[in-house]
Amino acid sequence: MADVTVLAATGNQMVAEAFRQAAVDVLAAYPITPQTTIVENYAKYVADGRVHTEFVAVESEHSAMSASVGASAAGARVATATASQGLALMWEELYIAAGMRLPIVMANANRALSAPINIHGDHSDIMGCRDSGWIILFAETAQEAYDNSLISFRVAEHPEVQLPVMTTLDGFITTHAMERCELMDDATVLDYVGQRVPENPLFNGPGPVGHGMFASLGGSYFELKKAQRAAIDNSAPFIQEAGDAWAEVSGRPFEFVDAWKCDDADYILVVLGSAAGNSRVVAEQLRAEGIKAGVARIRLYRPFPAKEVVAALKGAKAVGILDRSDAFGAEYGPVGLDVRSALYGEGLLIPTRNYIYGLGGADVTLDAIHQAYAELQELAAGKLDQSLSYLGTR
Amino acid sequence: MTQTARTYQDVSDFDSWKSTDFLPGGIVTDAGNSMLYITGGWRSDRPVWDEEACTHCMLCWVHCPDSSILVKDQKMTGIDFDHCKGCGICVLECRFKALEMIPEPDSLSSEGGN
Image 1: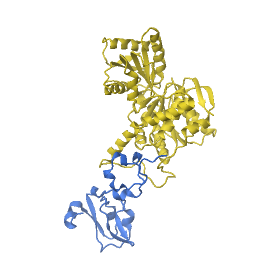
Image 2: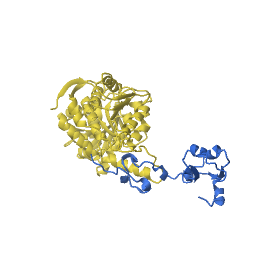
Image 3: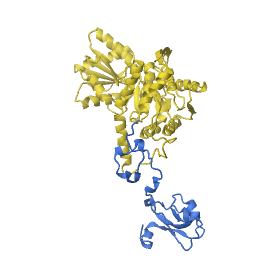
Image 4: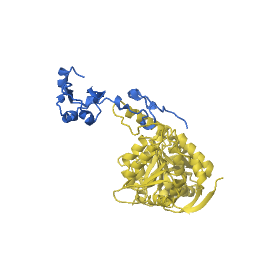
C-alpha cells in the first residue's frame, strides 16, 4: 500500500529524492548553480550509505556526460544534473547519448546563458539543446519536478524508447523555493520505476557488442538518424503510458499539455514551467470580468505534442506564446516557432503574438501577464500585428 | 521485454540496410567484422614483398598496425591489400630488404594492379 509523506521541500530536494528512490547505479556530476543542491543532497545519500550508487566526481560537465554515456552503454541506470553553462559544455555528448540511444535521466535547472553573466532562471540553456534528440519535460512545481523525474526513468529505459530524458525545473523559482510536496514511499517508487533491463550492454551482456560505431559514407549514418527520429516521434505513447501509470499511483494526472480552461477560451497564453501559475491567476481575474481567458501549459516539450497543443488552442480568437529564451535571428522564439508551426499544420491561422519574457530571472509580474491578455484582445480585433514582442522590458 | 530488432546480426550487407534494420543506436553484435571494412583504397604507396629475401622473422607482422601481413604455418605468405593502408612501417622494420615501397600507380605495371 502506498505510503505518502507530506513535507516542505524545494524542487532540487525532490529531484534528489526521486534519484535516490529510483536506485540509480551511476551518478556523475559537476556542481553548477542552481542545480548544485540536487547533487549535494545526493552525495549525502551516498556518504550515509542510503544508496548503492557509484558517485563519480568529475572535473567538468563534459566529463559528467561522457561518464554517463559510458555507464549507460555498460547497462547501468544513470542519472545526472546540470544547468546553464554546464549544459552547454555537455553539448557534444548530448547528441552522442541520444544517437547511441542511451537511457540517461538528467535534471536541468533551467538558467540563463552568458553573456552577460547571469545565474538566474530562464530557458536559454534548455532551448539550446532542444534538437539534440533528448526527450524534454518541463515542471511547473517542485512536486511536478519529482513526478517528472520518476516518469523519466520509466520512459528512458523502456525497450521501445531507449532515449535520454531531461527533467527540467526553472532555476531558483522551482529549484529553490520551498513548497508543499508529497513524497511516495521507497518501495512503491521502486516498484513503479522497475529495473533497467538493457538489451545489449557492454557489461554482462549476451556476447561481445560494439557501441558508438562508425557509420560514414554509404548511407548508414543517414539511416540511423532516420531511425533516431522515428524513436523520439514514437516515444509519445510510452511517455503517456508512464505518466498514466504514475498518476494511478500518485493521484496526480499527467498530460502533455495542461489545458487550463481552454475549452471555451477566446484568449489563451501558451507557457512552459513556473510562469504558468501567474498566468492562471490573471486568467482567473479576467474571467471574473467576463473575459474568457485560458492557459495552455506545455509539460512535454520534446517530442513536441503538436496534436495536443492544437486541441487546446483551436477555439481561440488569439493566442499569446510565452518564450523564456530567444532564438536569435529566427522569426520568433523557440516555443513561438513550434506552436505556430503546429497551428499551420492543422490549417489554423489563429493570430498569435510571441512574447519574450523573464530573461535572466527577470520578474514575471501579474501586470505583465495582464498586458499580454490585453494585447491578445487587440490582436483579435485586428489592431495589432503578429511581430515579436516583449513582456517586462523598460 | 520485447525484442523488436535482430539480436545477432550478419553485418556483411549493412550497406543495404534500411533504418529499421539496425539495432537501436547502431549497436553491432557481430564481433570481428572489421575484416568486412575495406580500407585498402586509402593507399598511395604499396609494399612489395621479395619472397626470396624474406627470412620470415615476423618483425613486419608484429609492427603492422592493420594486421595486413598474411601468415600461414609461421611463414609470411603475402600482404592483405584489402586492408593495407600503405603506411610503410613494414618496410622500415624489415632487416633483410625483403620489402620496399613503390608508388601505387607503378604497381599497375609491375604487378598488374590490385
